[in-house]
Every structure is written in structure tokens, then in C-alpha cells.
Length: 154
Image 1 (cartoon, rainbow, N blue to C red):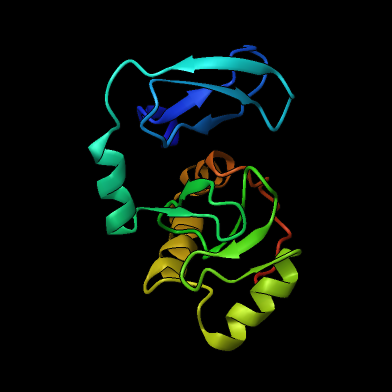
Image 2 (cartoon, rainbow, N blue to C red):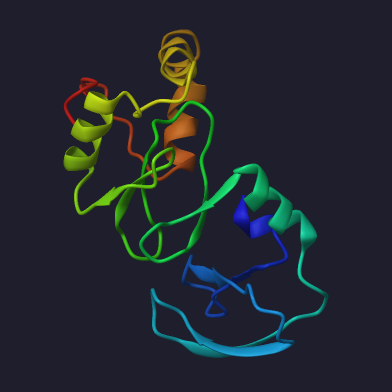
């Protein structure tokens, strides 16, 4: 999770759930939260986290192709994500982006890039065998559980 990374700084208001990644080598930076427009100054306490850089190299963290905001994807979710900063929908594997999830999911289905190997099967098994863990996976990723959801419809 990004919140555990030393490059991540939460919005200081205490009410806003957003923040940003401080990726420069500067020791101090003034920034405005994109979610609530609060301006604040951030002071880096330590050098840039090499673990963050390593996770980028390994592909565990990928940058939104539209705005470069970093993201992580839980195992068991499809490759179509919505950026937490710019709200653009993008494909984890291909880095293509679109304005709607339907547009991108339709393209990903046609190109067979919607799921990483084994993830759809994992999700279906989890939903069947451990519904509470499945619901928690969705919740952790900002997805509301819908018992009437039919795969291929959204």
C-alpha cells in the first residue's frame, strides 16, 4: 500500500483521504492536494526510498499513463484501474487509457489483456469459497460489492 511508503505524504487536513508521492530529491516542497485544494509544505526526513524505486522497476508499482500517479494492484482484480488522482481509466498491462471503464474493458477483452494469468480464476474461486474475503478485496480497492453483478457487463 502506498501509505506505507516513505515517498507517500497524506493530506494534512485529517479529513481528506488523499495525498501525493514526493518523488524529487528536494528536502522541502510546497504542494496543493488535488482532492481538497489545501496547500502545505512537506519536509523530507530521509533520503528517497530505494524500496519504492525497486517496486517501480519490478512492476509492483506502476504509474498512471495519463498523470504519472503511482498505483498498486491487488492480486485477483482485473487490469482496468481508475487513477486516484486524475480519474482516468487505464490498463495495468498495456498502459492504454480511456475515459470510461466500459470502453477500456471492451478493448481489453478483445485483446485478452483484461486479466493477468490466473487472476480471474482466483477471483471466482474466492467469491465462491470465501465471500467475506472477496467482499473485503473489493472494498479495499474502492469497489462496492454488488451480488447482481454479471462479469462482462462493466
